[in-house]
Length: 471
Image (cartoon, rainbow, N blue to C red; front, top):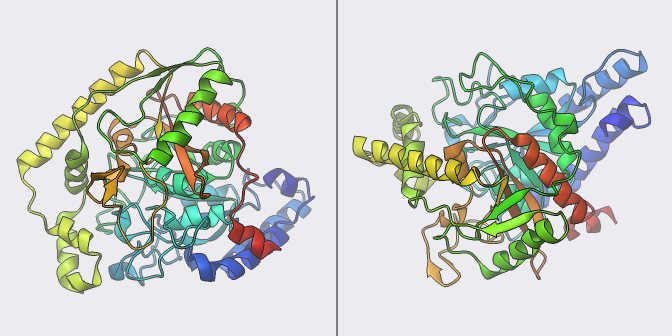
């Protein structure tokens, strides 16, 4: 789309209008956007069209419509974060990534729905209607980048921004049949959501959080990363630029790479439908892509409780507790209130840090021997709207968030990790494969993703909801 617009073969105004018309048709069923900005989008599209007509230089995303997750601050555009406390909040500054989208001449379509403060892997909150999965509207699209996943899967925008503190780019990418990339920690700077005390609760997990693209193709994510990545002084974790050639990162094959595969980390319950789809996808790496694949179990301590303790340690608990008292617990998501009111101990926090270090040490030692690590993205296919997770997986009773076992360890380690469509279940539900790279090796993740995409293309597949509406 970007190339066609620059070549004047496609009008950015007409492209934006077409997407807005699709939003009008599909939003009543999907609720992907909580704050659409159609007037702003058309205003930007007209400006870009005029600039191109006048021969002016334009950015790499000139005229490309983009959806922005509602945990990401947008100057002058309401940012609710799925909470009654922020239902009328309008930031006075953009997040770094929004600044970069704007500088690249992207067209902002609006804000996409999230669970309260992103503390969930699904897409419902008490402010807006629950976001639905385009593949089956009775099911969740995943979260917390719920609206971003539903929007791109339904063609209500070609690309979207998600954020990922425990899997929230990869989760909806898996459930919605998309490609989602969590780059290395620090690739994409974060500010102000994770760095400003004025916004208690809003994306506050500083050492876990990432922002990244959710797209229909691997090349689209690489293009977005070329715009989003690079250092910024407002984020002390941000990395220098120059070690990844984003626009050429998808070039070449992966023949000869040594690949590890863990179907369950050695402890996770996994739905048999997921095991079957992922097992078939992993065979592609050896049979079609020329890799050597070996099954592994990393052997780290079960990190589920440690994850939530680190989230608590990096949250503004004082501000969140005051918020509960101010707006009332009945106006907030029950499990979020329970989390905020938990009396955490210093030992829980330090124990969690020890577990994190153990996971990191097990991981770097494992990756000394392998170029890539493959796992399921999630332990289950999409499930019904309104719950936090299934009560059992493959006959085992589980906690509500245990279907997320494969994603959050990579937030501990900060490694690049992507979810790529591995296939669909017999009843037509997407299943994601997680492709994990070595420390800072985002380029190999993208190259492997593009190789798998070429062997098992998926972008031609659309939900029946979309094709029926188009017809």
